[in-house]
Image (cartoon, rainbow, N blue to C red; front, side, top):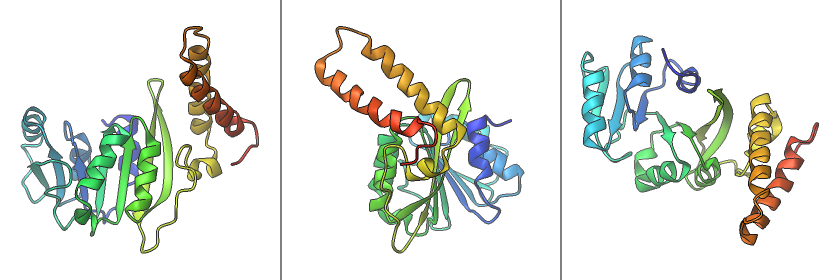
Length: 222
């Protein structure tokens, strides 16, 4: 059984998607997809211990169903892959993976990215790589908010004009989006109550609070 986050990612994968899961961990996603009938899957890890664990978890599958690779990011990405999933890591690391081997993205029509922090950095790099954000979702699991970003390759990419909150979210204003930023707002309030907080950090948080207030105000669209 998949976690809510992985299930949400799996739900975004179509029948004809040929999927790579970069940083596959235990291989839960590709295992689920293989059971659902997907073939030519690709799962990779870049450290020996996780890689050996991944091989052990997926040993029942032949390589024509799931190819398991010891590789750094996209460096060995097969040309057959048209959908790349990168989840369970910070936004900065996802950005570095995408930027390290841009030529490997030429056949990748769809990116499904789930940063556990700094989604802003991910949205910003998609512009430079000619991907347009087509969908975003926020999943809540065990009181933790997880952002999922879907981007599609375009000849002329639609520029993300609000990478901090995400233009898609600002238009859709889902319940989980409002809940997430309300949670951030309340957390900032607790931090600001610290009288020893450095002035520079205080000013930074006050600016953020002002932006969040506008976004979570009832009926407000930015």
